[in-house]
Length: 553
Image (cartoon, rainbow, N blue to C red; front, top):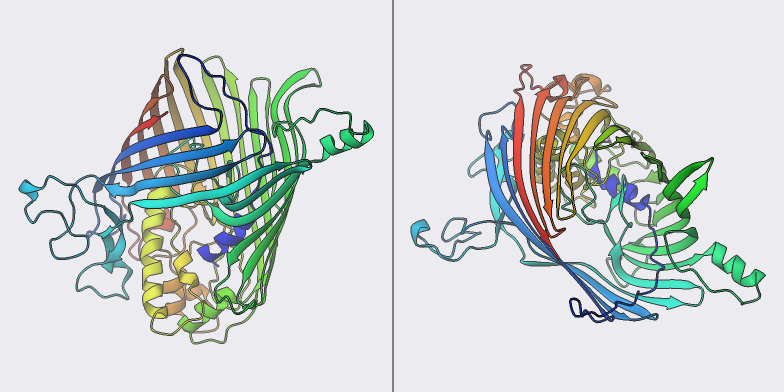
């Protein structure tokens, strides 16, 4: 089923790597007198984007352009060799430059005269209903302004270093780093930026099995190595996904994770130098009594540098059953909700080889699809997490916009039916790669490599096919008129499901100064395939231009 609700399941499968290392002492100098009990980081980002068109088939939303910002602050208050309290916050995330909106409505500018405005406000944009338009028509939904909160707390947790390892409690990253099922929101993408943190309220206990064995073998006479860059790490977690009514356990949704990770920061194997080796397996279970939910996931991750080469391989398999999705979907077609089986698969492979200043890379991505969105068939669509970017334009912006329109129509329908679940909120992809097979050759050229200036150019060609037919779940279910769904299925643009998304050409030029300032220019051009065509077989090419400034301490 083409439902983003299942992303929480995919996120469950993410690699929840523990942080075992103790606080390192910071040596004070005349140039740097940072106290050892304090770590502070700041990143300010400004993006300007131009996309033409955002809607490949219509005339309402052609070229769009905006400039937005975000300030990210990270604070770690440490008791050296004992523990720390950590907080990450975002300020003005997604807030547009300028004093935007209409006076007397939300968002409201600070002045009724644009020529008199001297105070920018907190307006952002999202997909919403155009004034006076039909709420049951996807084309009625366009970019609209709305007010944003100036502050968002992303992470807040306490961590203590115990004799057996580490105990961490609080709101924390679902994973450390970037995986197809979870992303910590850091700057780890080759293309584009991170906008979403995958977050959980969790208790985590982790230890290093190899160090425990050495400690026992040497009868306690062993100096512990607490680094997470090497060793065999075991982590156990319990996550609170949903609590709802505090008088009942039946509406709770929980998640448990068992992580086993083998890591080596450097090694000489088979006569070759290996660096940053990691082999990780995770066993995940998500459960809830409310909808008879029992879901399992088994993600695997292998990553290493071997000489001049780099390899990143990720696999994920999700299986189980739940009735939560069917409770909402079945109402659209007046059917009886049923428990649905899950069978979802995802894979990512990236490998590159460095030849002097040139790096040759190849990426392959796979996310299983679902061409039958009805509430009684198996759920088979896998979605990458939001910030695991594949390309710059097709999935990140165009599919995100069209799927958000479909989700809005579904929500409009369900909001009148007193639905016990709202899976249609998850149809909007938010830029995620799903129901797709992609081949993405890439080339990077280092033009300058320090000591103060770094400059590189990157080029890639993304070709993508649907893993199953590209089906708009909402409009397909609303079109259902018989036993078979194939003749009712339409894509997100109203055309046939299609067999090819299109070909995207991506370009990036990035200049970094003293590891403090980064200036990035990115561009993309998409030649659409039949999976993006409307009922008349029309879809026009689209392009993107993005300018980005990033400052970080």
